[in-house]
Amino acid sequence: MFEGLTGRLGDIFDKLRRRGALTEEDVSAALREVRVAMLEADVALPVVKQFVTQVKERAVGQEVLKSVTPGQQVIKIVHDNLVEMLGEGAEINLNAAAPVPILMVGLQGSGKTTSTAKIALRLKTKDRKKVLMASLDVRRPAAQEQLKVLGEQTGVATLPIVPGQDPVAIAKRAIETGRLEGYDVVMLDTAGRLAIDEELMAEVAAVRDATKPVETLLVADAMTGQDAVTVATNFNDKVGITGIVLTRIDGDARGGAALSMRQITGKPIKLLGVGEKIDALEPFHPDRIAGRILG
Ligand code: GDP
Image (cartoon, rainbow, N blue to C red):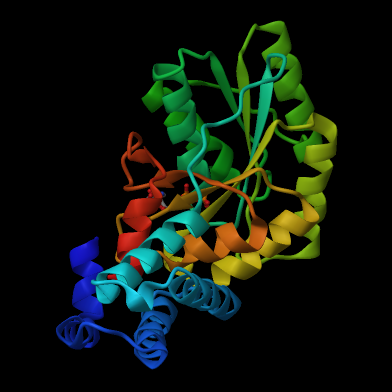
């Protein structure tokens, strides 16, 4: 991480190091580089501005300029501030009476159904929970079937498909089945759309009201960059999310979406999707994403 950052800001900090003492202008020049690196990593502009202001205040406030190794100190402040803004990861909250409802929301293609199955498998193997999954996607006939196949692959139960039910009815049936059959957790995979629309939000909100989920996890593709901000803002305002699952971290995304979504919603990034395989799910470590952003 530090090599990456030093590499990125290499020239500028090399000069700084040789010189020993730093001026406020030197720090400003370094922060301009940081700003470019963050924008290239798809961090939203307001978040970049906030970040640079914070780093500047800390760099000047801590008398870094008078220290023996000011260059390194600035690098450390940049890194620490980024890790702080990314926040800690968090476990899935299961603190409620069983069956605990978990609502999965997000755009179509974000990796929602795959992540539902990944999380179910994790809860089953790591936490020894009895999990029931249900697909509420009645628009794409293949969606409910897709979750059923994933259930068979992972050995996690899926709610039997009953054609003709609407999403709220399926959700209620899932909770009822969970209660009657002694499940610990019921995971509800809502329908996605290619873009945010009122109808999607109203549908997800209706499911939320009918099931009172303990977790509402927004699944978002790390590769979407700036769009991730719009998606996160909309879902958080209209449905209310409790955490974020960031997928396609195995791709070449620069990680900016993670910082923007965290800052704009204030909600923790809980898990990372790191591949197509069903066990490719990892806890979130701010250090690693910080490394990607500063490259
Ligand atoms: P949904 O429409 O949001 O339910 O998306 P799906 O779960 O059907 O996923 C869409 C595609 O993305 C599938 O081909 C998944 O295998 C793939 N996918 C999901 N998560 C990841 C991930 O973390 N990394 C990679 N490389 N592919 C993923």
